[in-house]
Length: 331
Image (cartoon, rainbow, N blue to C red; front, side, top):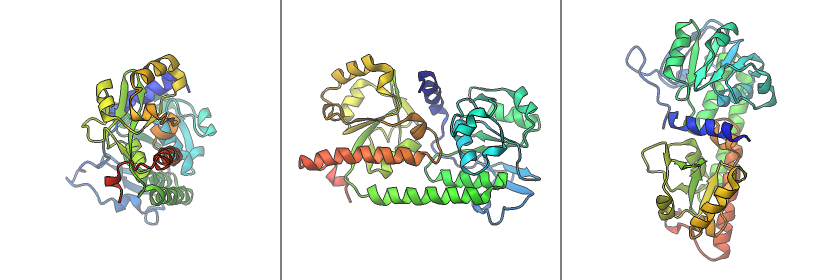
């Protein structure tokens, strides 16, 4: 993976919200969530749904020409069975393979409005907290229908799959994908939810050291694996961490979405500085592919499986040495 692509993803982290709470609608109250969740009710056109801004979006027919404004949304559209309806997608939309041939329309740092209009979409699916409000507003002023989506928690992914299925008329495929995701998520929770707790530092960037707080979806992955994000209580969704604070936190494990191969000399130098930290001393530093853990898609569960396996290996060492990690937090 190219470093500039990873840097692009990291620079977008501060734009993420701690939760996708719908704003008030014109009437002053957000519509009931069930209005969005009911494929049995919203299975025929015309459609009227509330997006994650709290805005009512209307379509006279199922969307046949869709533009996605984030790589995560592009993946969700394919997973929901509507990949063939994508006529445009944001830069770095590279999964699945079919996404690579979809024309690019810019990214969260700036959209190509001329190209989007030329594609004549009947629906644009935006990233509520990643795409700028000004860009979304400009598209709407140009007469484009925009559905703003937000996946802030692991449970939001099946919700968005179902929404895409409703919008694109692929509810059967979307429902199948959503249920498979929910079943696997529950299996992970049941398997690891009561395991001994492991303190974890999630490294999302290395120069400077950056991590996440407890509201980020990656922290949710740590939680379901029986881990504890050592910086969960900090106010910022993403934050720069000093070496002193990291040494004080002394995590049992480090989960990194930055490949050590990208900066081998810097990694070796940091390892020397952090040689007394538990994770470094015990070689409990694990790499998880950034597109798995940074994107909000069905592949998030692949990241969860990897993180859970890594934390299990830490537990195995602790059990072999006859020590319990955070026994007071084990229920």
